[in-house]
Amino acid sequence: MLNQVADGVWVRQSEWVWSNAIVVRGEAGLILVDPGIDGSDLNQLADDVDRLGIPVIAGFSTHPHWDHLLWHSRYGDVPRYATADGANAASEARERAQTMAAESASDIPLELIGLLTPLPADRGGPMPGEIVEHQAHAIGHAAVLLADRGVLLAGDMLSDVLIPLLDPRRPDQVTAYETALDRLDEAARYADVLVPGHGAVAEGPQVAARLAADHTYIDALRRGEDPLDARLAQDWLSGPHQSNLEQARHSSA
Image (tube, rainbow, N blue to C red; front, side, top):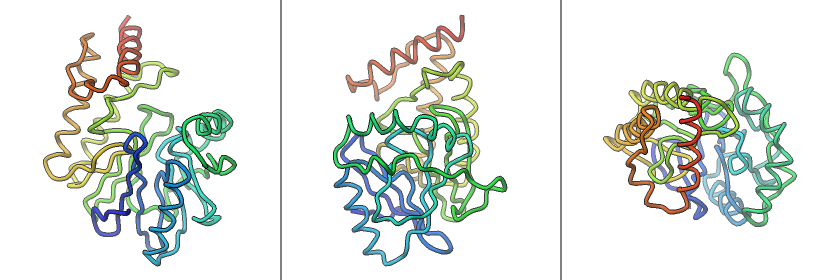
């Protein structure tokens, strides 16, 4: 079910890696941010949106990973936006995203994956707020600051369940993460609610705590140390963590 976290902002969480689908009310209707994950989630989100009684006018993808590129026909044939870099990367990786989606979840409309339109150059369009673009974790990764509502939609950053995940295909992701966290630090000055792509919604002092946790992890990588992070208690993160360590060591070398 949808949970309202601020004025005109709702979140629905999937069991799959605690993924958050976000619904934002704009001036003309609703924008669906990163809807997912499997077919039942997509359908239940459509039911929730129907109950709001407000039309869906657009979609928005925070970054071009398969689980953030999903859609369902029940949401309508409306534009689905991303940053220019994100949209281009999604187009190039669409076949791979479809394969990963088919292997990871059930009853997903594969033909609708990754059909994205670049945001207008003036950052107009129906998405309210400010787009905070960076290159950490994925090409053209975008957070959305809804300053008038005190909300920051962080994409796959600032999670309480996921460590920072460096993109293994791109160089010097440690520096990219440092730059991204600096940008999110600035945006978070105007937010008392933080919605990550995966994990629990943070409120009040929890927002600063999320930023501090990611800064501490990345700072340790920069120093060539193995970070001490409570999120690493999850065994399945050991592989991504080792990949992060290797990439950081390679970059420093």
